[in-house]
Length: 242
Length: 349
Image (cartoon, rainbow over all chains, first blue to last red; front, side):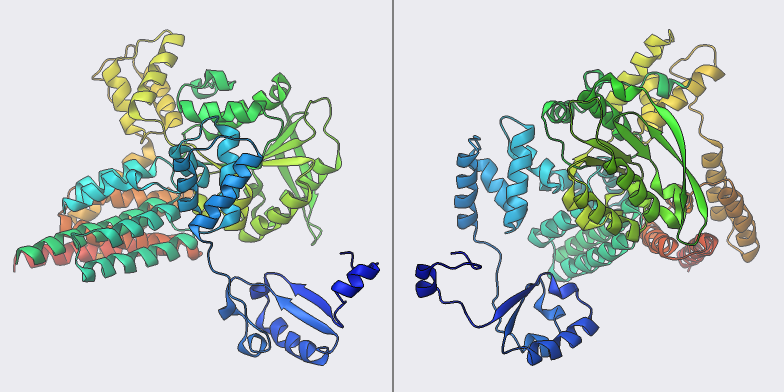
């Protein structure tokens, strides 16, 4: 339907509501002052205007503002739905992508459709027959096998092999923040670690993440976390033996 | 001319390692579109070489006709600052972090100026701005870049180069196609060294090439410079030829040795002088702290190593957020001394 000059049919089927809409995108980045000011405005003009706030984190919208709105929660997309959509797109663009590649794209996107479509496009532009490795490369995610040598070295429970493995991995240029993410997933899945040691390593991971955001050196931070992991493996082993 | 510059490959076909990456870049060079790019990876891995080879694939030999421009900018507070740019008819290259706190102004002005002129004489409708060291740009400049990038996307593409990707803000990263350039392996460096040796008519023994590659920390530029230095110093290279370390590395090694020998306030004063000496010779504080920590960790027990690495990462972070470097370097040295001393005393208890 056209909004400015509705036809008779439109008027019958979609009667124009008696209010205007104002959409505020990324409203969680608004300052609290701005949000507080908005509170009055919403109330004063509620007869003729409705506000739609779009945000990533509802916790960053001040409570008085959030309580004035009806909330709709959008969760990460279902993998099966994403798969269907990516299939539609690849058929529409006439590119051949294997099932394995689509699965990898969905895995790396973490439920983010825009990211998935972008990865699909760049992967298909730069290689005629995309492989899962291409997808990892394009999405900038660190595959678990890159960290294999580091985890294996940490399992020895000694410092030197770990230091060598970390230095070796860091020169391959993977961004440290992504390395920590993958490492975190690996540590959580590791069967030979006690829960308390996993917790220790996770605390170290969180600290290192913060330090990296402050601009600290990547190699030192990753090595610090790996050193914690060395001790975690050593302690877990000792506890099991006892 | 240094060998590093003289033997730098000019085209994508001449690149000697990272085959799959080269194939991807060639596909990019021949396609009509070019996304914004972010090259990241350790230094001496060939980011810059790949970037200029890609530009050559996109625009042809025209990009090799470079001129050096000195441009001056006026800040809002009426100060003028001069920045050096390298430019060709198709692209412009600059290191915006040279401008210090005015980096945002420089980035915006240059891109605006680029975008206001039509691209000339090329088959492409866009020009390219290459920004070096984006990880050293201030957060404000990076945020400013993101708006400028979107506004002028029709006439201007950005290629960003950085070594530490975590210092680039996320919105900027997601606007670019990230291209990871890993450091070459020891074998790859050795074969490049041998090839350069052949061109220079110098026999490079494989064992010596491998030891250079290892000592360079898999940094090709460094390896080539070390090869040239070694070739100048000795008449013929053999497998036994010593790899010469740089002055500052030897200096840090001495410092590390001294503070493991004696731990006292007097020694801390000596260490302070040495640290100052390194700082006034323009060795970055992070590099000093890192290489000092790695030297200290070489000959100590595992338990102590854990303490040292966590101290190093702790003080290095403070270095980045703080303003005066010497405090944190000294604090690290003091921390090492106390930990080391405690460890020694506990051993005899």
